[in-house]
Image (cartoon, rainbow over all chains, first blue to last red; front, side):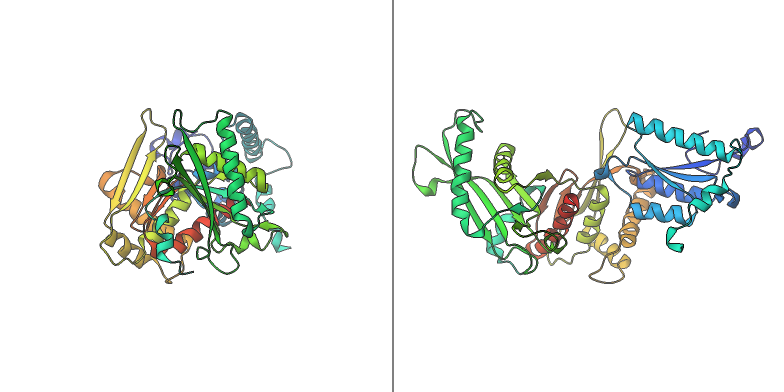
Amino acid sequence: HLATSLPLPSERDHLRPRIDLIVFMIDIKSKYSLKNVETSLAHVDASFFLGKVCFLVTGVGRVNACSIEMNAVCKLGEAYCSPVLFCELELEGIRAATAQRLVRMLQICAGHIPGVSALSFVSLMRNSDDD
Amino acid sequence: ENADPQKTAFLLCKAWTLYSVTPLYGFRRGRLRHYARLLSAFIAAEKQKGLAVEVGVELDIKVALSSLADLRGSELDQAALLVQLSSRSRASSRSSEDKLVWSGWFCCVFGEDLSENVPEGFTCLPLFLSHGAETYTSLVGSWFQKTFDCCFRRLAISPLNLSWMVAMWAGCKLDRAACAVELVFSVPRLSQPLDISYAIHPEDAKALWDTVQKTPGEISQEEVDVFMDCLYAHFHRHFKIHLSAAKLVKVSTAVASAHCDGIVKILHSQYLPGVLMLLTELAISQIQ
């Protein structure tokens, strides 16, 4: 399901299936996309941040068109304890590989992989500096 | 640091195309006349080969190389190197008939990040600016690349860096009534390209920057973000368009203007070192 921002319209709440994973897409060429994601995050229930949220940064192939500061995105990932993935949608190989990664994450979040839960993502996020 | 305004007057009000240049190997400051002769011979030879710059025009190209000792940041920087190509019609041999057809200069303003880390024998002049026909630029560039084993790359300026520039330059104090602060955006993904020009009265822009900047002389990313967000919010209130979703391609202030393709124009000698320092930093980060 694709949405341009959150919250989702309440009229369809009762028809909506369970949400297992939320992927926030940030285009490095658009400051607006980062702002949009930041305001949408406020509408997400706290329980999702236990491994059911990830940030996908697109357009990383074109560093010269960068409108947002990478530091800000990484800080966002840290603040919300969620992984940040980088990809370039214009390259077919990377697009396919990223899609596979997301599907894998979704399978885990939906509980289809025995022995691994969404909480595993949170422990992988722990800063190695802590050790 | 205080360059003689007469010597640097030629830099102002010209559109310079920017390149980053890796350190030059085996460059000797004392051999400029010799290099000028070699470059002259190279250009003549390339013309013979049929890579004539202008068809049907008989022109001799005279090359002059000079050092601009004042154009640098600190004593640790290399002095700037100016290359000028003049043409003299074969009909006349008087030097007063020489016409400047192309100029390019290498410089380094506060580039210690790079010069501290290069081995012996290398000269760091990471920023190259050219003005004139592209064919001459590539001739001069090829000769330098072959002779000093360096590499030239066009220096593009990202929207992020352009927003730093407009925030910094809009905040500069200028005596005379200045021209408007202009930002040009290109709107992506339309069948017909659309450019949006957003012009702000320079006093308003400076007043806005003054309320945002906390410490004079220091600028942070947060301050630049707040400044830009105010401009975007103002525009959205009036036109219901989110400029933050468009691509910032050009910024223009009374101090200088810059285009994302790596073209700058410096309008005010007072802020020349500051502008060059920023451009040197961009060139160095492209090299590394």
